[in-house]
Image (cartoon, rainbow, N blue to C red; front, side, top):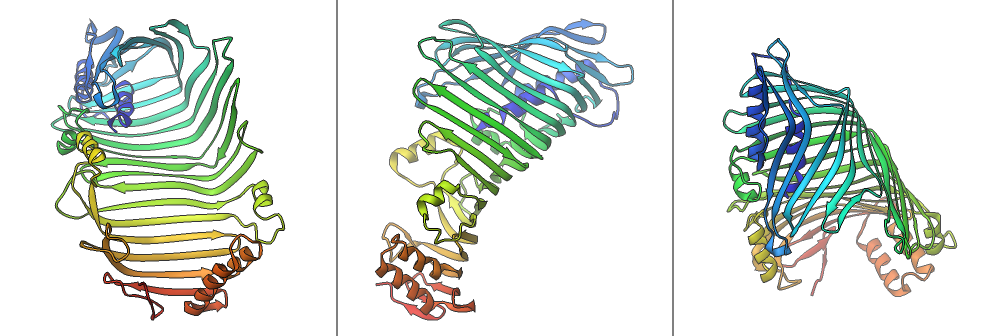
Length: 517
């Protein structure tokens, strides 16, 4: 999990932080903070600067990080080293420092023994119109930065099988980036950053270098109108390979990103198979956070349209939806007290392709309305283990144990709409982990209330029965029970139900008892 946040740390080291000058800082002050920040993430500076008066200059700016072994995955460890050319920190004469990089330089990543192999990756880093200024005090430095264009392209890979130029193009370009960041380094390191990017474009277009194995892979696209806010707290001596200890020492990150639109094309082909996926969206949001309070991951894409075709797909699939999202919020640390959790799924107004409707409903007996499925769940429970402890989680996997227990589950929203019918529901359930459920002896006892609203459901059941998709007997029974137990709202096919289930196994629907045994 920690690898998810290492790019943020590396980016902050290379392109960091913001605000008005409160006092003088020197190049040595900035370098000292960079070194402290890098050390917190396990990076080690390998190059000392050349002193040019009070200014600092690196013909090669280099830092490395040890990658630990992972015996469970049969992976050996190693050392990764990042090197950039011609980095400078220069006094500007007003108590601020300019961080300078050339418009074009070579960047290398060297893997020493990583997973049993040595390798060298060579890339070109371009920085057009790049400007970064540091200001503040030695333990509270802010950075303003902007650039016309920043790009990185992979040039060459040197591994055990020799040196290979990139068989095509692999590049990422950031256009119109500007922002502000701030790092305070007295005690716990605090980092805050806000930035915007006009456009991020990526281009992977490679072909197989082997004539006897023809094929290609393309992934080309862009995201536009990006804005981001992020913050983090980092203990000075944290070990990113021991996330439990790091979180207990105060490690925390919190970031939000929005974008206004994007599109991409992924295309793959070899001598046996082919696949192509094209997407376009009208923007979305992405939030992520991790701390002792738990982990949150949440994304939402608006007006997503896509086309998929390939050798294993009988016909091109063209579809779209108003929204697609997924969210999860879970505690991370074991506790004797209850902690909250939640999850959500959003699939709003999904347009099914005409070809699918032709197969499912050739007689047009059903309304071909868009399909919606939305779920929002929250709850309370206890964790028996630290979810970030790989050893404990591995032991649970081998023994078949469970990481915790749920004591309360709330369905905030359940909405399913398709083919002219809608089911809407919410529920509030309590769980008694000291008793067995009457439904399954391996489950704890549970009970609570639920509210249901069924619109057009009995009519859909009747149509599905007429189409031969549901046997007449079960269809008649389901439709009859819904009409008998449901409370009529605006019409005969608009029914509601108040459901009450006790932990002892008593069930009522709108006050009518329902036998369960």
